[in-house]
Amino acid sequence: MSYRAEYIWIDGTSPTAKLRSKTKILATDTMPPTWGFDGSSTNQAEGHASDRVLEPVFTCPDPIRGGDDVLVLCEVLNTDGTAHVSNTRASLAAVTQEFTGQQPLFGIEQEYTFFEGTRPLGFPENGFPAPQGGYYCGVGADEIFGREIVEQHLENCLAAGLEISGINAEVMPGQWEFQVGPLSPLEVSDQLWIARWLLYRTAEEYGVTVTLDPKPVKGDWNGAGAHTNFSTKAMRESYTAIIAACEALGEGSKPLDHVKNYGAGIDERLTGLHETAPWDEYTYGVSDRGASVRIPWQVEKDGKGYIEDRRPNANMDPYLVTRLITDTCCSALQKAGLA
Image (tube, rainbow, N blue to C red):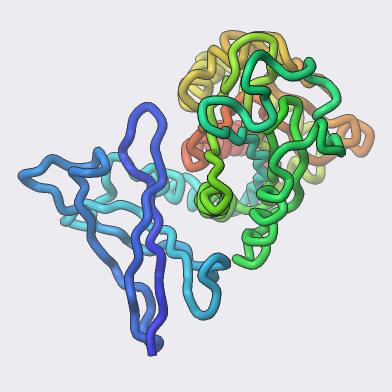
């Protein structure tokens, strides 16, 4: 007897990495082993030394093939066992280990846009649809496009055992969102990458493509982000820790250090319009969706909870974003005696 293991990894494409995958047939009584691939075809090696290594780090049921088949998320290693330069998970693991005691948790809101050919799903062949407004969390065939794909993707994620916490239609036609978490930094990042792969794979069945482009339609249309919700044990118990985390994200060069790692094309999305703060300014505020970081009103009322970093793009690398936020906030809280 045998089963199929779909090995999934993040390639070396710049400025935005792509997902790759291939299938290995395994005997039923064996676990997915280390495997290899041609790095020269994924922007991760040169032809004269092309071998790269796939090291399994997260496995879950394959909801598309079903049965005993599995999805296997992998880190990319060099043949000497060291992390490849494109492997951003390895550095997150080191930071997570340093701050395990603070119990950091993340919830990520992944926005994305369906495309049919060269136009967003729901856009007429000539011209533009009605202005945005009624599409957000809308209902009806005149406002909602691609719901059958969204529902199937949700079903697939749940069948895979992923911690999906919700879905909703977004502000632009053909634009949607799903949320993952709350989970630890490594868990939320691993599961987001698998959920992204399942999104692409599910849309394949409908002949529709998915883009994480932060500004899929130029002009007066919302961009696509990945709002990142964050808390530590101290923040979940104290409003003082909430403010300390917000202040830490705005210290010195931190805002620009973060933004330059929050996804390619971020200046096109973070303009100060469409519920964004300008990319080169840092602000935080209660219930303020025009701020860089929002403190939900309920958090202020309760005097504890979490914050929402609204800057990350839809095309961000969750390993990078969660590492930066964890390192910045946990270091500051530790220094302030709030860890």
